[in-house]
Length: 435
Image (cartoon, rainbow, N blue to C red; front, side, top):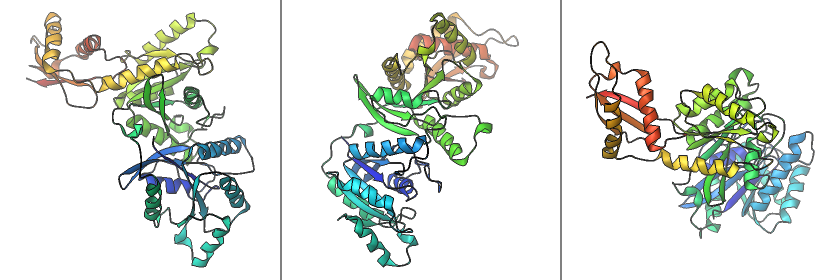
């Protein structure tokens, strides 16, 4: 299994900046405001042909001024527990603080490899100021600048030297599906992932906006292998109040684009709102697989309401109604595994390539039996069809008058494709070209 490396330290020492630098792109949100990173954020790094997993953590504190401080501290200890190597980041632009000493005491008690990483050396005027940090008592020390990358190559060399003997990492198999858990704020996305993993992987609270980064975790249970992505709640633009939340929403949308299948959570009490439909359209327009999870269904006392709920939702999402709908409950663990297994089936179905001969053998008799009606007195014929070599299913039909084909007939063809080849939960594109 891949080795895990955690970046720890107090707030605002540059942990997220270093995390982004080492993985090679901006995944963690960086802001001068402390407390931006709340959950553990996972990313993957490859250096000299060796892979390892990097964990960005929230800033450790011993003063709990709000609900998040205590939960961030819990995540700090979770990260220490699961890590193989720990990077203790300190800031040269300030003197050693009491909190730095407290963190060092915690780390010295661990039987793990710990590197003292002295950051922001680009701001240092006197080199001798670095020696002050030697008081923390760590033998392995590296001076870096996470903002411009100075010294990070030497740090990476040392990390991969320890990890030379590595096993094949499940994360890097191309056939492992990536499933994004998406929805409005506070619909239970993080709770769902925590329930699946049977541990407090992500911070959960009843305050909307708790999750800010898109957080990836590998899931392997019950014969299932996939990557689960917990995303920030996606609000309407006019309800976004701060820059950090704006970037969180953008990360969530980016996670949709980078996923195979999206599990859209809908609150069973408030029902499917306009913002749920907006998110659904984002998923559909990006040609991703879709599953709808009506979450917190344990709060629905009358089971007859589930049928009404499902019928109403299908009417709202029309014309793309061929979508699996599950009533889920993290509290009762209802339909969670079933929905994940369905999502994985959809992920592999996305990559299905139908042979041209089989496609024509099945579709042409249907088209000939139910031909397009005359347009302007002209008979419209379709002679041939083929699947395009795209990631998501796209089909091209060759006709004598492609511009005259009605939308209703296009929907008819899509319906038959779905029936014959089981494209449930998958957006399909159908194109008409001149033969």
